[in-house]
Length: 396
Ligand SMILES: *[C@@H]1O[C@H](CO)[C@@H](O)[C@H](O)[C@H]1NC(C)=O
Ligand SMILES: *[C@@H]1O[C@H](CO)[C@@H](O)[C@H](O)[C@H]1NC(C)=O
Ligand SMILES: *[C@@H]1O[C@H](CO)[C@@H](O)[C@H](O)[C@H]1NC(C)=O
Ligand SMILES: CC(=O)N[C@H]1CO[C@H](CO)[C@@H](O)[C@@H]1O
Image (cartoon, helix red, strand yellow):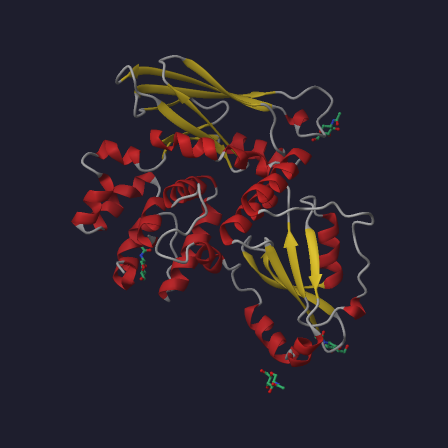
């Protein structure tokens, strides 16, 4: 499974190279009888449609000639403080030269902030509209890169439709928040009850001790959606955790993973409580923070100096994608709650790789290196080093 996942993460220009490295029999069964049927397995990236650029053109599975042009739409005048005020975009597509009367092409249109899809059965002009950008970051991304267009295996339509309730999870709105809560209720039976005011407790630092645990659950925005999916696939009710540590001077600290360092890498950090708490209070993803003190019996056995020693040894180390992915994929099969399956995870990962190559490569590089005890740095073409992974035992 790992080998397959890794293979499919290779950008298209690497795929042929990866195939060459595979034992002949396996390569054959992946590709099927013809090169065309690779389309039956996974989404294919066909183009980025960027505003102001030339029309993107590609060959589909059903329609031989396709074109897409993206134009930005202005927001309502004078209201540029809201997302709606940022405007949106319209993607205009042309499909022509169908291979048969019954075929169709299924497309996914994606930015790191949203995915949408449509399918076409007629040679015609079609439009896909983004009514308003989720936030300024999305607009900037699209101006720079464009909207990514993926041609999907047509058999995936049913799965996509059954996942339709995942789409609003990433929206940083009340709607997005309600979608997250409804998703957790439906798929995990988790209910969230609104607290009475005040919404933030008054925590006295002297009541917090080394080893006390912080469990976080974000329920809106990009990280909210990500945490919801994480809870779902791992079966946990928290999307993030941290641990409290007190130093010899009685200063309270929080040790956690996921701080961005100056190089833009996400690392393990130890930050003063006041700073950490200030950020949590300002977080617009509405984090639910639970402070779980150690039981007195356990606290009496908690070795503070050993904990500090460990925390300091981890300081500045990578976020821990290598653990994250293996909390999802921990058995040979049936790793995912339905309707998620390995195909869909691979599809999502390959799209993610295209949209946020930096995050995605972190996840896979760290995960595989950890698993295999290697220190390989894979840059933009994982397939090049596939041989090295293969030799180190991925064939098992
Ligand atoms: C719109 O945004 C610009 C900068 O992004 C700002 O300078 C301007 O004051 C805003 N206009 C209104 C009406 O909010
Ligand atoms: C504790 O305080 C002393 C004296 O101010 C200082 O030298 C030491 O670095 C402090 N320890 C920590 C962990 O901050
Ligand atoms: C606590 O940890 C330190 C450092 O690892 C060790 O030297 C010490 O013996 C431990 N104390 C107890 C009571 O286990
Ligand atoms: C091209 C490339 O990145 N090759 C690397 C593959 O992995 C080995 C270690 O296993 C490196 O030494 C190579 O540089």
